[in-house]
Figure 1 (cartoon, rainbow, N blue to C red):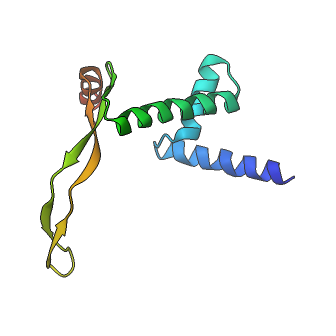
Figure 2: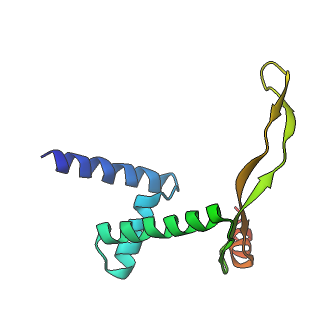
Length: 116
């Protein structure tokens, strides 16, 4: 009975996420399993592996280019001074590496055409 309850919770959660127009890993896996006639478990492993490969490449310093979608890469962000939001005291933020995403032309066009 416990697994049925957990399945219903996951299913209810995914329905809620879809209503809010949020796509998480579970929903992405489900859509892939439906489109390619795979089990949900198998498509979930595929999605996880894709994210792992992308993450490992970025950490190594490689650029991940997905033509039409965009490019992911890591870059160094310089050390900087900011004001603390509450106290307004200056604080120093250290240099750090951040992930940057640049959308591709196709994604930019598709997004621009969806103006409400």
